[in-house]
Length: 254
Picture 1 (spheres, rainbow, N blue to C red):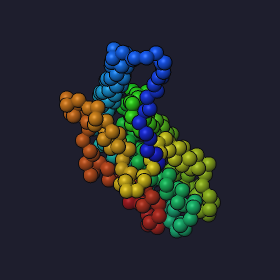
Picture 2 (picture 1 turned 180 degrees about the horizontal axis):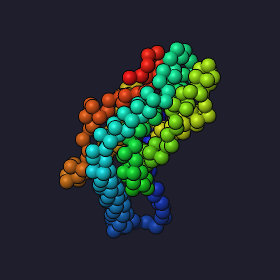
Picture 3 (picture 1 turned 180 degrees about the vertical axis):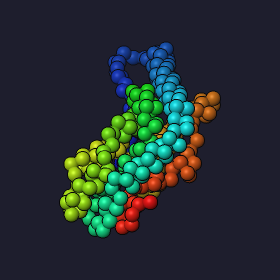
Picture 4 (picture 1 turned 45 degrees about the vertical axis):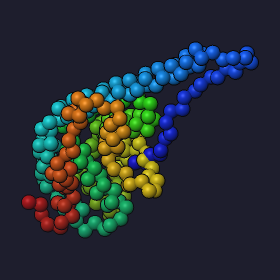
């Protein structure tokens, strides 16, 4: 993902020049008060949008509690399917664009399968925050783009990886099936909703969710700290087991 630094919102002011001698202090005071009121309204809107975002994020966390174990069970079921239907199908496969694409499909599908139980909560969260906006354009861009990416990923249709792996093997490991090409294209498009560009001496880009939470901090209220989810455990973010190890070992699957 890539992204560029965006300047803050520029206010537009219409200035009337009068040739009448003497400008009253009352007129000057009215102009100053109007600008202050505008800033106050903008600040209140930012705080309100932040509240809605954090409440939606908290609700999503409640809805996906315990789903990791279900996702892990689904991945184990996929491993069993691979063992039964297409063990060692990639044994002896060379390293080339075709095998790279099928391995990409395997890893992506395994990751999505691990997160499949969270799909309804993820889509609900995305729909609740997709229209939020802040005076900080970067924050609005990141939050909306993140919601679009989450929903697009959750709505991906997962292909039959055994069928696709067999198609690669049948081609002599020279080409992939239309199913593989379509899935990879859709997955890449789903993860290309937000652009992040890092300019020196900035640090390398981290997780988009972390950037959003950092940008929300100026608008958080003290009682909203408890709504912010904790970072997942190391176990929760470990690379999921992949069926490809059973495909290319050259040994019968156990």
